[in-house]
Image (tube, rainbow, N blue to C red; front, side, top):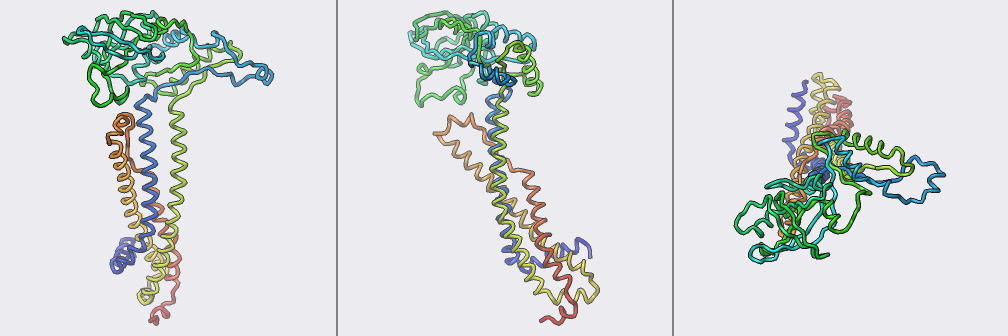
Amino acid sequence: MGFLENVRLALTALRANKMRAFLTMLGIIIGISSVITITTIGNSIRKTLSNTFNMFGMNSFYAYLTVKDDLTEEEYESFDWSYTDEDLISADMVQELLDTYPGQFKVSLTSTSDKVEIENSIDQTINGYLYGVTDGAEDELKLDMVDGRFINWRDHREQKHTVVVSDIFVNQYFINDENPIGKTIELSLTKNGITQNFTIVGVYEYDETKLGRFDPGTKEIEKETPFFIPYGTSQKLTGQTEQSYEELYILWNTDMGMESAEKNLTEFFENQYTTNKYWQIELGNQQELLDIIDMVINVVTIAISIIAAISLIVGGVGVMNIMLVSIVERTKEIGIRKALGAKNSSIRIQFVTEAIIICLIGGIIGILLGMGSGMLIGYIVKAIMSAPEMEEYVGIISISVEPSIPAILISIFFSMLIGVFFGYYPANKAAKMNPIDALRYD
């Protein structure tokens, strides 16, 4: 008897006892759906975190000063853990990095904010916050320029009085829809009372999801937005002469892979610190943090999935039990088939196929239920995130609901394996029946 004929007989037997077949599948359905739900949630959390991290820029490294790991025991014990300006990353070193790899890297330096105020032509006071930045801040903050350009490295090195303002500030200050690019504005620093002129070189779009939401009902003139000036200029205004750094935030061009970027940076800093006895530059990346989180999620997902899969064993025992009952009920049928010349292997394959069909149908139903419940949970989370009190996180957290394809394929295979494993014993028992005893069974 061929495979298709065995499948037809199995489906016929299931249709003859629909309720019993469904109850037999129930354990498989519950087990598979639990595993798929858990893996869908785990995969969705992983994708959501990845999307959120990517929004804030995965193409970046933290370069920071750390003690060399090849110190001898004597050097390590005598080391006083102090460093000098010569040990730090100098501005000249940064400039050399940018010159060595033109267009490949940007460096983001950010000074602490200082509150500023300015009056427009109708004597309205506009408040904001002054940040000293370098060109890498544009990518780090994911700013969208609507006019002009952002602060560049030359502005920082030459301590130019250039400023990038928000589109909100343009509406607050330029009453007559003037073009702000090239205009000079006078900013007063409230902390030290210094007033300085700055030339507007760019306008960015203020995005509340990235830069902070305003309280409901805030008037346009009362909205406080950041002013970005060169990092070197902000250092000069606050009386700081720092030209070296313990750590840097370095972004690489996305046209270059992370491995190439890391290799270039590692080689550059190794060459710079070859003669330094105690200190070196270490590189850290957000991808490393994401990999750790991903590993933890995988471990938790697998552990919970294994616990949920225990119910599959219960389902398998149920399949074996029902198959034994079915064999008893169909003893005469088995006797007739054997009397007509059916081989033991044919009887065995018939009942194994029936067990596999039961488990496979249960597995498919479980997969569909698991995917549905996993996606339902995802949509519930999305609905919660759309609530008014969660609005500030909507643009930051990018929720992605994705079932795990490997988990689905494994579940299908596993459900068939259960059918073979738990169906073989009843099938083998049926195959070994004596046809005469089977025909006499009442």
